[in-house]
Image (tube, rainbow, N blue to C red; front, side, top):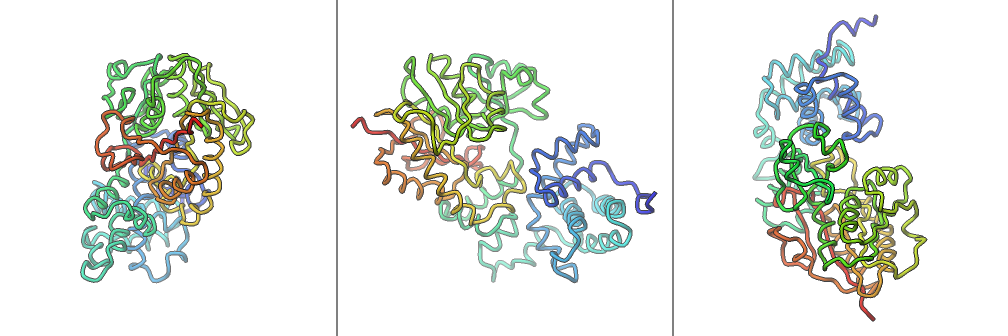
Length: 450
């Protein structure tokens, strides 16, 4: 047996380390990789919770840790062996942001380095993390970004561990420093598990009877602490996990006016199926019909597993539709975007996304909007939705779209029943720090009768 394997690593910390390697070594998505890793290590609920907090928290805050670590090692971080750098980040997170005593964080991380990398690396980890523990996180922030001399965006980037370009994008919308701080802090808090009770199949009261709590605004929303698979209604498919913001934008389209029997609806980009599941249930109750379109066969399968049998799921390119123009009363165009509104759910996304991604998505977003608009009957409405607050993906893109199509932009705020602080309109921007939802953007465009 390899001599490096004589030291045992704590299973929860080993799981978090393997998550880091899966994300940065294999380009995995944390939310997909982590359940498999927890199962592979057979972690009990307590250890699984610790591994989640450690792994996801380290991914979110690694910008802050890299800034600190770069002052404590004698070479650029890019020159450090990636597994060793991940172990240093994991140790820094335990010391600076978790309820782990410094000695326990230090000893367990040294053991992890010895087990996974080797004794020489363990010596380096011991020396570096001892230096990390000499200051509080507030002291490190002040050392790295002195208030008197550091521009606000650079200080916030270290303090809240966000890339500066994302903070600058938020500043275009939120000028108040305190509110901007609240948004950045909200992005660093794990989102609660939000459920949707599918209309006609389950009620929120039934979820409450199983121990859930009611949601904030959606009449179909409930929150749950723990594994949603423990709920019978979720296992049966009568309820599912769905962010309340995602529910609200689907409901806003359904709330436009009373649903008439035989209306035809289109979900243009329906994968993985959350909004299609809710819209399909509402359409079925009112004797309307929903077509759920998805370009990816894999994602279309997820949609089929989500929606009622009455919903037709079509695998096709929304840019080259097979349906006739002017066929649908309501269209949902939840277009591919950078996902900057869901950073609290995707801990690694802030580091993977780049400004160039926005320009790369623009032709697709424009094309899908135009295809969705062309699918409307005269007087029909299109909901343009993105899970991003970036102006280039929302208001600026919308202005271009309206100029191209001649559609009428309607005031969407009355469609978000009971939701406060919706701004000046006519579009709606939800926020995690205000509404406890993903930062969903919603605009409603009507095709003129003539």
